[in-house]
Image (tube, rainbow, N blue to C red; front, side, top):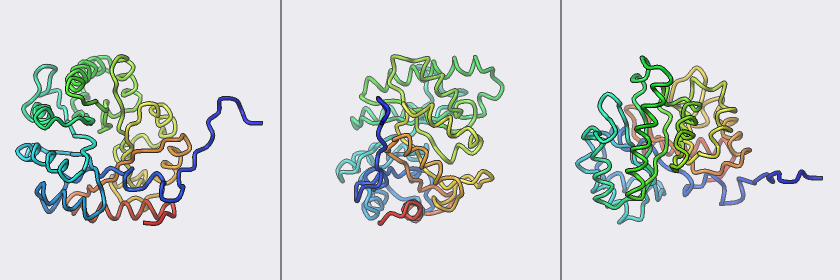
Length: 281
C-alpha cells in the first residue's frame, strides 16, 4: 500500500520530452568567456546554429555598450534572455549607491523592457574579515534593495553561489529566510561547489524549494574546477539526486573554459550529458 501524501516518482526521460532537451537547457558563460570575442550578432547566430532559443547573459564591463542592443537582437530572433548577471562587490556597491557597471544593468533592463531573472553573485574575499553576523546583515540589506528594484521593473533576484561566505548554501538559506516577503530564488552551480561536495545531498534538499536553475559541470572532488560533463566521476550521481527529488529543470549548460570557444564547449557539454544518460541528440 502506497503512503498517503507521498509523491509518485517522475519519469524524467520520456521520449523527446526528457529533462535535458534543448528547450530546458540554458547556455551560460558564453559572453564573458569567448576566445573569439563574438559580437552580439555573431553570438545570436551561434545559438541558432546550435539549436538554442534561450541563454543567460553573463556580461563583463566591456559588454555594457552593446548590452541593450544584444537583448533587443535576441528578442527579434525569438531567443529569450533567461537571466542577466550582476556581480556585487560590497567595497564598491551599496544600497542606493551601486557602482556604474551595476547600475548599467538596471538602466538597460529598463531601457529594453526586459523582464527576467537577475543572477547575483558577490565578490567572495570581501567577507573574509567580517563576522557571520555582519556578513548576513550587509548581504540581506543589499539583496532587499536589489529585490525591491528588480520587482519594480518585473524582474526577480536569484542568489548565485560564487564562492566565499555568500556561496555557502546554509548562508543563502539564511538570507532568503530573512526576507520572507521577497520572491528570491537560488541558482546552484556545480562548478562553484567543489568545497561542499561532502554536504551536497543535504544542501540540495535544503535549497530545493528555491532552485530556479542548476548549472551543470563535470565534477571531480580534486578538480579541475571546470571539465566537460561526463568526464568527471561525481556529476551523474549529483544529477540523479536532483531528479530523484523531482527537480525537472531548467539546467544551465556551460560554454565556459578559459581561452576556449563557447560553441565547441556547449556542444561537448551537451553531448557529454546525453552520453551520461544514454539519450539521443
